[in-house]
Length: 278
Image (cartoon, rainbow, N blue to C red):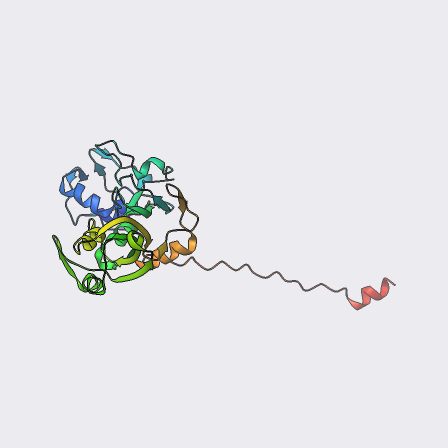
């Protein structure tokens, strides 16, 4: 059965089918790459099940928009990989090690830069990816940071209150001292935006150096214990439920259909027939 609901927005339909994130699809629409019924699509267009939808001239088959089984992976990204499908410099990408999804394609939920390791979530559900990255849902990202330099209370207060960066004011929601001595002192920090190099830029605005950066949590999902760097696991059912709940997409499974209880009453022999049988 088609996933298109009568009069749904084009970018929502394509994102939910795993063709791309909603942000990517909106860029394709602006670039004139998508047509509906041979007409160039525009932002805000709505589609119906019978519409002819084409991307770069290629018509989408009906089964492309059918309900896919949502997949979500936890990947422990190492330093030295980029979060793009093809890198012009020939560097390894996160997609080199991932399995082929059952349907659609993997969409990374946010990015980690070349020198940052840690938890990276990927899904085939474009709508889920869009919501988890959109600022309006205020999804927390927690990082473990190793700092080289002297950190004092005044600095921590400024980082929590707000620091002006090149692209506007930013701050840490929380800062926890995670221990260590000298050049190996660690802090755990939380942000609610996905701005480029935000964690590094905040610390460096205070004259200290980030010598190591590791994402350990995205929303309610924590980097799984025992997961080795460069490896992946399917998200657990409990974590998937929590993740969907965080962005209003969780739908509880329907209650099981109760089967009618069979009539277990035993048929008894009439008294007269029982007596004759003696």
